[in-house]
Image (spheres, rainbow, N blue to C red):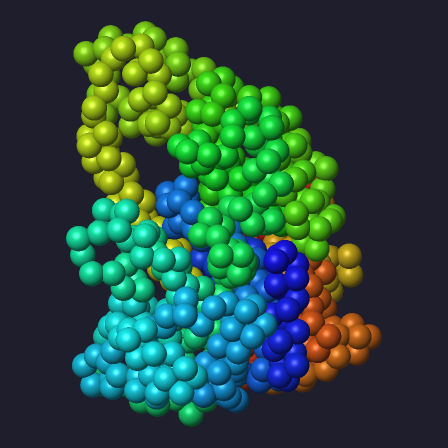
Amino acid sequence: MLSADLRQKYLDFFIARGHKVVVPAPLVPENDSTTLFTSAGMQPLIPYLLGQPHPLGKRLVNSQPSFRAQDINEIGDNRHTTFFEMLGNWSLGDYFKKDQLAWIWEFLTKELKLPVEKLWVSVFAGEDKIPRDEESFNIWKKLGVPKEKIYFYNSQKNWWSRSGSPNQMPFGEPGGPDSEIFYDFGLDFHQKSPYKDKPCHPNCDCGRFMEIGNSVFLEYQKKEDGSLKELPQKNVDFGGGLERLLAVTNNDPDIFNTDLFKEIINKISEQTGCQYEGELKIPIRIVADHLKAATFMLHQGIEPSNKLQGYVLRRLLRRSAVKMYQLTRQTNSSQDFIAFVKKVIETYPEYLKDFSSKNFDLIENELSKFYKVLEKGYQLIEKTPPEKINGKFAFDLYQSYGFPYEVTEEILISKGICFLEKADFNKEIEKHRVSSRTAGKGIFKSGLADQSETTTRYHTATHLLHQVLRDVLGDSVNQSGSNITADRLRFDFSYSKALTEEELKQIETIINQKISANLPVTYKTMSLKKALTSKALANFKNSYPDRVTVYSIGNYSKEICAGPHVTATKQIGTIRIIKQESVGATVRRLYLKFS
């Protein structure tokens, strides 16, 4: 089966059951300072899972392009990728376990025709005062799953909340048990693995089982006393990786053999002269995965840099260059990488058809700079006496020049130098990671939007700021992006010159006048066409569904939005502009903070 057929088959299946298709969210989430990338289809839906009415109703479905930075170091096996598509369906207080499990079972066994005997499932075993999920267990049995193929796991495997286990959930946090589905590729995988002397089960790491879907049942909320209460709105959140579902539909444990990778890998093999087999599979998989993720990031306007999303993009491009070096034993032309990116674009015409040619220049510039880094690394290795080359030396090369350990090790081995200091290198890396985690804990603490009171106040203020900027600077001003933390609001907008002190003072004064006026904040659901006709502001970098929510602040501001809002402007509090800066020739940035 081809990916486009499977994707459409999934959407059609749930459309026939009353679901509306949600437009995929951007890969870089808006108004969410807690995460760098959209990592699942449910991430943009958090406000609706918490009770806000969705303009499309209570049954939703989509395929969401996603990225998970934490999987970078796992790439190379047959099932992990950084970039992937997540097929998802949601019930916002509508159907629950009985319908969800029956439908996803029907989709897998009837629509995809997966052999029933190859499917296993898991359910929540219960923990503390939370009972085990007997309801899901009994539903699976009625659907025909033998009880010996239904495994119970604790909250480490079969519980979802954005903060982990039930005990770790903060006050007000929703969570609940989940039920996963696994595809069995056969006992041979276990018997040939390092785990062959241990019992095999669906969550075994032997490679026999592949998780292909997870139904999360959000039915609890944390109370102030630490106990859990049942949610009045019980939600379903299903996620299934398109790449994995495609692999098992073809009964092939290697997702890189699907049409989502095949032509990209063929091009890499052609350019390098390396066949996709044996030990060469690992570097080829890494190049294919990383360049696919990089292509989607470039398409979203991310450029290589040393910060946030730009740093991740830089790392992907550089790691691809390293793996190409390992394949060819030489630095490669940036034209090779551009040829690979073009294959990614051909693979995803529905997402990348308007890919900008300027991105090819960004790739060429980035890789040209990195090749110079490689040359510096070679020179340092040549000049350094062998007795001074150790794990600390390798880390300094890595930290100062981005020179990867694998390349250092390979060059030294080719020169006959025994290099067994990986442990020291790892110690230095771990020190650096601990430091980075401490510095960035506010950014990476979760993969979901912060719905705190402070964030809600700042977010509502962006609506006022957007309209005030247009009033003061002209209607050509449009929002280019925003970022909100607990400490400040950052707002990007289209404008070609620095604002004067008088303009800044005027903008700040008008915002605070509107806040003091205690204007009501209301919302209506309407068609996109009607919203635009009513002159509601919209961010045209985004794609919108046919029905949207329009938020109005009195008669002053009107904007298409899905974020959290106060109910009246006085709840925002006095705010001041603390800094302005240039983001580019045509984009300015303002920072605001509560007084």
